[in-house]
Image (cartoon, rainbow, N blue to C red; front, side):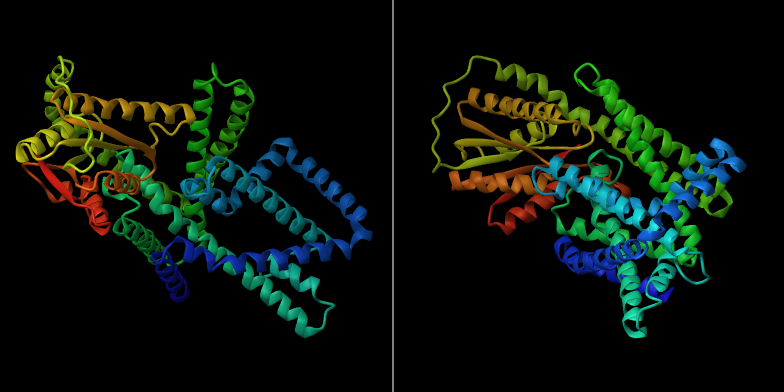
Length: 508
């Protein structure tokens, strides 16, 4: 327990330093694991080439005998159970899936290539080790993993010094690689929370990954949760494996279900939808069957704890989303100005001013053509009458679960935000001001908005940036936790870059 707690604390501290630093530290460990285990597999096969036919015959005989006792259904269930017990191997697949936004461009191609490499290396390593077990007739021993028994048998004829050194290095590299696998939670946990926050399943302040405060809190939350689970279970490996395995197959079943729904919805536009639907359908069947069998088989061995904890987390997410929906109904009162502004913008317009980059420029950060943006604009006009000659409207379309469905949906999002900012510009042109728009699409509103702001500031040296912040008449501690404070994160980033930024309070 002290070692496990210290290791968790170490991982937390490493990840607080940043993703790049924490990953680079473990690169030598990966190559050490590949080198030792690759050599062990090749050595086992090359030194036993003569007995390969006998091993194949013995394996065929064992399979036939098992089939005679269990039947085809029993064999199938046995294989599925063995498959489910290897859920730990999915850690890397989860890491790539959840970390897609930080992969090198083009992200989709990089993700596919990475998945292919992982599948090939995993299949070769596991297949090679299983073959080596058969060649050396490896049997379980108390206090040892099968790999430890294998490498002990493999080096039995070596001199004592080199043999023990090789086994120690191989086992240490495997242990360290499992330690590296724990990085997945720290690297991708905050990113998953950010995705949930964008879709209002988690406090929206976790959506701003570019804010170091949010990133640090995400890492600390992952580390704190790991410490709590370790202490609560007293480090019981059996219970922890059940906790991990059931949740792995919950997430994979939901992912496969989502892909099945996706291919069925787009069957009219996807030429090869049948093959893709079949692939994800088979995956859905496998993962769902394993999820149910694991939950039933391990129910009293920790399965009920897993289902209770996961169910409580899901219930909390639904409560948070319900709160945000209630707040959205309150915010609808701000949208009462939209029809009037739209009508006024469509009226015969005054000849707008020509662009004067050296003049005072108000840069409005908006999030759609809505009540918040309109009230922010009107407040600026009221507080600074006759000060600004130019108006620039900046909007970042954030890619979330609602629109991350392919290139077509991303293009629709881009068009939607362009139309929204154009409505602001049309209104200000009708008022006789010069107005233009700047927009982009990205995964992080703060980092994208900061980059756009620097471009605008280079063109308009006298630019002053504005953002609206909702102020609720009755604010509770829960409200302060749940409601978005992106504008304050923007203000910190803008100040860090020497850009003037004013927050306009909008009372709800």
